[in-house]
Amino acid sequence: MTKPICLTGIKPTGMPHLGNYLGAIKPAIEMANSNQYDCFYFIADYHSLTTIHQPKLMSQYVYEVAATWLSMGLDPEKVTIYRQSDLPQIMEMNWILSCFTAKGHMNRAHAYKALSQANIDAGRDSDQGVNMGIYGYPVLMAADILFLRTNLVPVGADQLQHIEIAREIVSSFNAVYGEVLVAPEAMVQSETLIPGLDGRKMSKSYQNTIPLFLPEKKLQKLINKIKTDSLPPEAPKDPADSLIFDLYKFFSTKQQQDELAAWFKRGIGWGEAKAELFKVINAGLEQPRARYEELMANPKEIDRILEMGAEKVRPKAQEFLTKVKKATGIIC
Ligand code: TRP
Image (cartoon, rainbow, N blue to C red; front, side, top):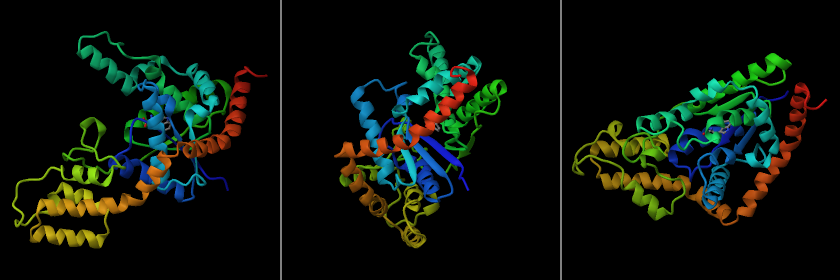
């Protein structure tokens, strides 16, 4: 029996943080390990090129994100992991699909709209700083998805509109040429809110993140910055109303949680609570951190793994692209 094809893109924009890990990386790795899907996870470097124009940063981000997924348990035997830019077929698909994409859909895409609205609000020309890559971002994303006849796309809720656009492109194309493209379904990852240092959602834009792979000392320092109230150490505290406890839950067993909850109720000093939190997070990250550092010191190994993935996908990509080109009469 063939398994559903599950594909997702990872945009390299900096070292992932705990929120990224718990919200996206961990569930995607669990999906791959369930053996129920044929999984393809790729590094969307051309999507990053819409905004990242510093060559050193670009390559650093690609390695960081690949090393993160690999060290957190992605098994390249179970998941085909590759670089988007290693498959020129995606770029050909991108053009073909763009000829079936209503410009109006691009005008309405959230990311582009937000940028032009910000320009308008600031009294600037609405297109200032908007390149064609940003504008056409959803088409490239459709190409990523459609060239593999993807069935399922695990994404965050912010990406739903993009999947919708990909489905629209499928309808426009298939209306002309018949059932050539496969319409993908989004699979929205449950929105467990992972709080950041200040209690708001952990997000790079709030600068409240805990990056995954900090040296121990730095990790400890950041954890010490978590916002607390000014209750004295001996005062009983409510675990349900504590950011430290919220984060603790993600890294501990039920028994550890019960024990810490009891300590909260007896009275725990915030310093002590933070030390407990550090212990569990650090224990969970110790091994992956060592593997991460090993990979980052040896980027050739990362290249090798990504190239291995690209080699697996390339023949499929070429075969399907030929089919699409034949459908259009570009190849006869
Ligand atoms: N746009 C996605 C993001 O910002 C990344 C991405 C690129 C993607 N291509 C994709 C996700 C294809 C799913 C499928 O996170």
